[in-house]
Length: 206
View 1 (cartoon, rainbow, N blue to C red):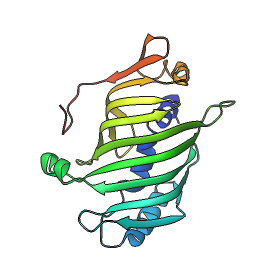
View 2 (cartoon, rainbow, N blue to C red; view 1 turned 90 degrees about the vertical axis):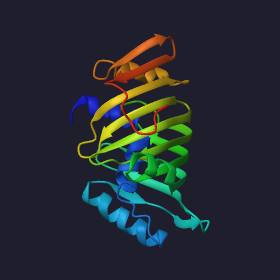
View 3 (cartoon, rainbow, N blue to C red; view 1 turned 45 degrees about the horizontal axis):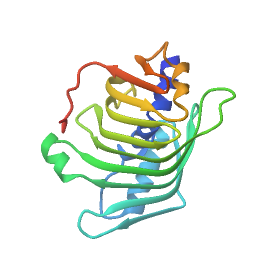
View 4 (cartoon, rainbow, N blue to C red; view 1 turned 120 degrees about the vertical axis):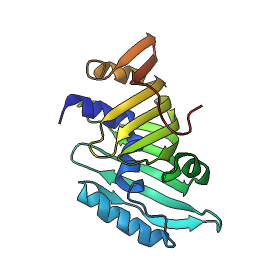
């Protein structure tokens, strides 16, 4: 595993969750059945997923609600107290591709860096579009020990970062020092970083 991949797992913990179950999440009539399929599909990719409760709220365009979601892989583990996701008709119509809204609350990430304590995020939010073999992350926002905002495009096959336009800050923004040699990171001022790669060519962009 290349060192750059470790940085991607840190910066895109949201994508780890989304690629490990939302990409496999068939928004069908039964949330529990859909979750079981997602867990099975994720396990085929080398991820272990678990949740203490799975339900659906609302009748029109219901949200899937998962409590105490845990994820484990050979290089990453973490948990979220609450995960909500729902189909996004607006983004699906604009992009002509599957799309969803995703929100994670009370997130804890065990960093793949020796000696570093877990990273805590109060919330992670984004709009996700799945056109073909990539995942477009729109209006990404995190709050907590690391504040990240912007857009990104990842390959859904290998998880590689194809495009990015992200601003990074927060009390633990110094973690970016660990990855500046393997990611296109630039320190704008103490505690403020940007990550830019490629040109912005995503659906739903402003």
